[in-house]
Amino acid sequence: GAVVSQHPSRVICKSGTSVKIECRSLDFQATTMFWYRQFPKQSLMLMATSNEGSKATYEQGVEKDKFLINHASLTLSTLTVTSAHPEDSSFYICSARDPGTGMNTQYFGPGTRLTVL
Amino acid sequence: SQKIEQNSEALNIQEGKTATLTCNYTNYSPAYLQWYRQDPGRGPVFLLLIRENEKEKRKERLKVTFDTTLKQSLFHITASQPADSATYLCALSRDDKIIFGKGTRLHILP
Image 1: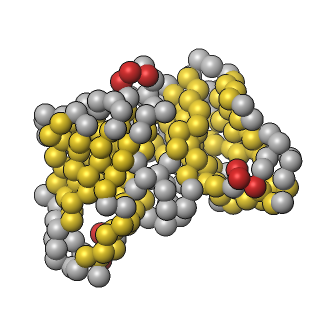
Image 2: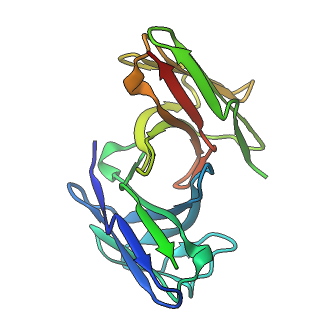
C-alpha cells in the first residue's frame, strides 16, 4: 500500500512554545491530507482536512489559529501547534488518500506523540 | 449524530480459534465501511474496505461482512495467531471524511 511518513515521531516541549509536525506521502501525490488527534483508549478524531494549494477545512471545535495547517505541495502537509499547553498533549496522526486507488481509503502516518510540559 | 459502536473494548481469544469483532452504527448511511489495525503508539494500518452494495469481502485469513439493514459489520480473523493481537478499528465513510469507532483490543492467547 501507499506510504505516509511523519516527523518527528515524538516531541516534548515547554508550555507556550510552538511545534511543527510534518506529514509526507512518499510514493504518491496527495491533493488531500487529513489530521487526526487520538487520546488514550479513544477513537481518532478528525481535526482538519488539508487541501493542497488552498485553506484547510477545520472540524467544529478545532481552533484554526491554534492548529495551523499548510499543504504547500502534493506530498507535504504540516501541522503547527501554536502556543502549546499541556492539554494539547496527544497522539497526532496524519493520513492521505491515494487517488490512484480509486477507493476511499486513507493511508496513515506512524503518528507523532506530543508531550507539553 | 452519527455513532459507531464496537461491541467490546477488549476481547481474548485462544490461538487457532476465530476472532469475531462487531461494529454497529446509527444515524448514518455509509458508502464504505473499513477496518484498520492499530498497534500501540502507531498509526492505523488499512486492512479491508467493503462497499454498501457488497455483503462480504475476504483477504487471506480476514473476512468482513456488511449488513446495511442491521447497520452492522462483522470482522473475522480465522486461525488466529498471537501476532494478530492489536486494536482493530471500524471506520465509516461516505465522502472524503472517515468516522472511526473506539476500537476493540484483541488479545490472542498462546
